[in-house]
Image (cartoon, rainbow, N blue to C red; front, top):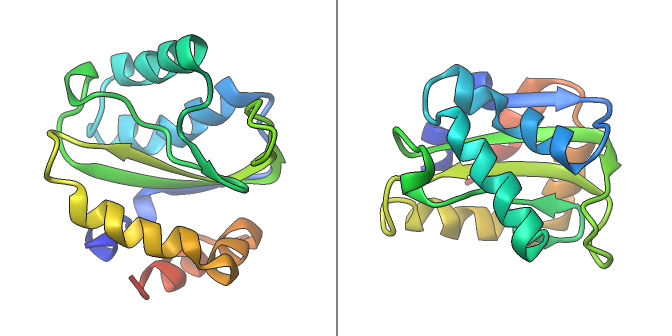
Length: 147
């Protein structure tokens, strides 16, 4: 399933992000570009972060920004964004974040298989390190092909 959802057009590699807001903006850009989400979805992620903190930072160096389906999801989608130099999200144990996997889910169930496969990816320190060091989209795709 990850291979179907994570294609070259939704993988972006950046050297830097100014702050967590810029990182979220970059992480959502591919899904905005392909119409999977609308701008209100990005706004909802910002709002939730300000209200409850970096709830989507799921492990050392890894974030999975997402909001509710009703906040502006048009279809199930994922995107991977690499911030090579990392960015702080005020998540003391997990900063700096270098790999962001943006999730856009249309309901409570359609993304369960993708989340399971992402969990396997997130537990593979070698693959996460390879993604965080990637300089080309093809390098990320080669890792995703394992899931």
